[in-house]
Length: 131
Image (cartoon, rainbow, N blue to C red; front, side):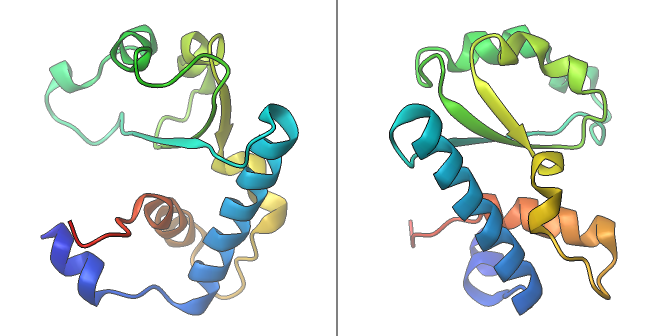
């Protein structure tokens, strides 16, 4: 379960540090653009579901979150969607950032790049509380 993973799994230091650099870069970017270091995150999975009904369009995602996330908010998007044009509708309302925007902050070293990116994205969404 996710609680077991949260409570007992620890990423290696290189992943923790890389994710921390991205979080810090996101905070700095948000502060510079909005005056606040706060930013939102979204995990949009598009390629690994066998049921078509789970693949909703960006405009539908926007309709689902527009009452929660204010326009112009800075959002970090973790996704497996390769076509960034998919996010055009969301980008008209939000300031979207992706893993690709932070490649200079990442150092892959001996770690497989794909595993590295997945783990950093997961770190960004790891629950921090006991609830």
